[in-house]
Image (tube, rainbow, N blue to C red; front, side):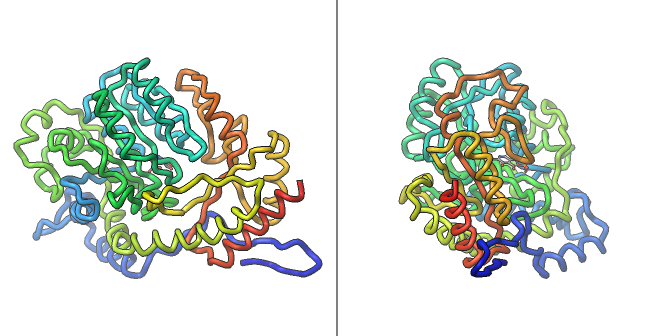
Length: 402
Ligand SMILES: Cc1ncc(COP(=O)(O)O)c(C=O)c1O
């Protein structure tokens, strides 16, 4: 997907939003399901089979979690996780200032008040600022976003939270398949939420998965998700005794996953680890080219972090805002689509905390400094290693030609 002509600058013609096709096995499973007509998760056949319940069982096994609940989106999972945790209206919820808008959106949806915590140069939550904000806000829960797949030092984070009795809910939208010190991302929190939206690591267009080892919390989440009185049809749900009060106390906030999406996710789950390694080959191919250039700064990746390089971020710290805009233009002209987190107004999926009008404005000088020169790009698996190297050369060239 590269075009080279010795007299012309190199260009790239690949598409940054092009996913791999859904595999034949998944298509066949989907067709079988469509022929059965049983698309609703509780519309089970004579054998009691439901694709959603089986997916939940398989994802719980993948994660080594006791329980799993599938729902309509990652953002929905985050929202019901907070409600099931027991968040009350108007309570503070700590979260990263550097994340995507569905995260503060989920907090607001659950009636919480987002309290933003600074990010550091490695694009993870700043633990010193977190300690200060725990004290000043009185929050009892942190919704930690592993934004763009960057994992904070979990061995430092957990004692800090435990000492202050702050619960952890993990947003693992970008860390499905990732690990910290060999422990899967999503194993630390009281509840953890994953997304299966198209640009994530398994793709059903939309979808979410909530995992937890807390039976009471999961019984509440299950009823919240819209189980009616059919929670006994779950294969990765908590024991039925846990539903005695939640079945009547929890409102039905209808957000179930359907069997069609589950049917195309199940074969993808089997390929997840293999695909994570493929993403990382692409990440390292690009990162190696970028790292040779002294003006570009990539976040460090600690040895304990096994990340999934489905996207890459870098900064050009000596750029002013006008330099950033011109750089984006130069890259775009040569076919490389970058996103910039420093823009004044949101574009496409990309926004920063200054444009979340539903969150009280908060001073985030360190985050603002970092985001002002932070660029981001997706690395779909449809790109080859050569494509990633070409993208790297173009980016380097465009930084040089300032
Ligand atoms: C960091 C992060 N968290 C949560 C979400 C929410 O996921 P969904 O789109 O499935 O609601 C996203 C979605 O892109 C995300 O990027």
